[in-house]
Image 1 (cartoon, rainbow, N blue to C red):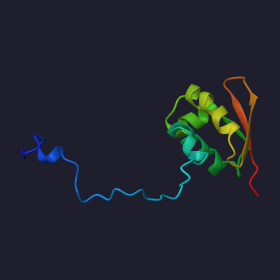
Image 2 (image 1 turned 180 degrees about the vertical axis):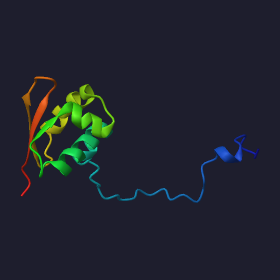
Image 3 (image 1 turned 60 degrees about the vertical axis):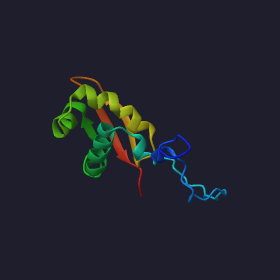
Length: 107
């Protein structure tokens, strides 16, 4: 220890500038996709990939493709439907599981 009684590793460095520096503001707002959970992003990617060839999707078939349960798919669809991802999603039928009507809104 030095003469001040403070160990060297706890002393304030003398070579650090003490004047205020200007830092430009950086937008750290996450993109809409980044605000989704991993499961939601996987479901969204599946729908975006297949929406051009198919309109109706059963939760259980999406679940089978993604290794999820139909309940997991159903409980995560609202977050996707509420977002701006180039898809319009609405529940279409409930017999033997939920069917979703998915249409692409992207040009």
